[in-house]
Length: 196
Image (cartoon, rainbow, N blue to C red; front, side):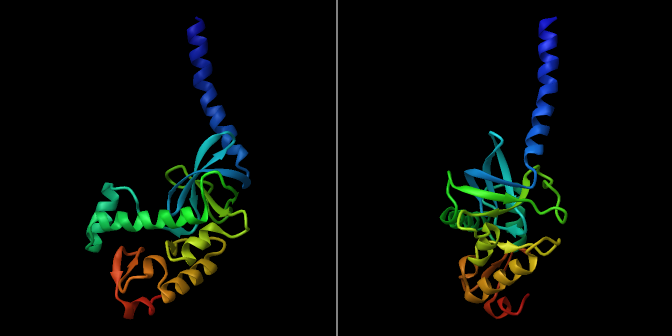
């Protein structure tokens, strides 16, 4: 009987704990970085547990070899290794901006964006200790691209930062043929500056 009671309690406690953690994320929080996952995702400590945070409005190359990475690389005429190398470079650039143990401030994008993406990651604008917006810095330095497919606060700033990074050939745009992350294809220098 005691085992059944313990089992029922544990089964009911997990959803309650997850609900409390979600409620703790009320739209703004100062947290500690636990890991830099890639060029558009970090892990933070939120309410005593690790939480994946996806930077709103930012799209960086994939870092992990997967079916998705292979498919995107194949459609672009690149190898999965090239795609993963671009992702690794993007992650390395983010590590220069934010490190494990740094304090950052998360601000959600509601009402324009949902609280979480389809993978369960928190969607947030991430502000560094110096007040800079990490999302925009990754784009401005050329290590990520601004999303165009949905509206969000700062979208026009992000698009402007991407345009400047392309023109200055920073980060992923540094090569004569830069990566067009949206289409996963290479773009010649003459077409690079003509696209919005």
